[in-house]
Image (cartoon, rainbow, N blue to C red; front, side):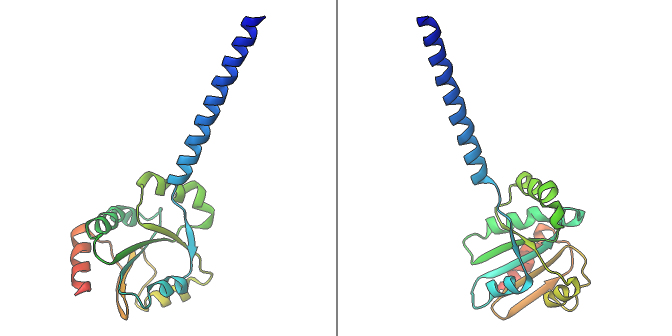
Length: 171
């Protein structure tokens, strides 16, 4: 009988340790998960006004191969120039229905350090025009903004092109 009680206590203690370990793993994985905030173009522009920070806003989607190809360059740029007043915002144009199946797994796999936002606009043509009247709506597209200065690019950047564009823009 004493053996059964002792055995039962050990099983309970091990079960508690396993449960605590699982809880800790869940807690820390939740901390590392990239939070995705929705935004509108007006909200994006509001963040960039009256600031001496250079904002680089990249419009992309997980289903856009050229977008996916250039994204590591934006991560590398923000790391290389982290002492500058620079803020890279990765604005996804993925569909809301794809957040759980495509967007979140992609972000986790890529381990993005830059802020990821999900664009929520009802009128696509209106937000395209607000970004830049020359934008056809094709992806990827990038805006460099600092105070009243703005440069729009409807193209895929290599890392070298991105660095050179950033350096020329901030002058």
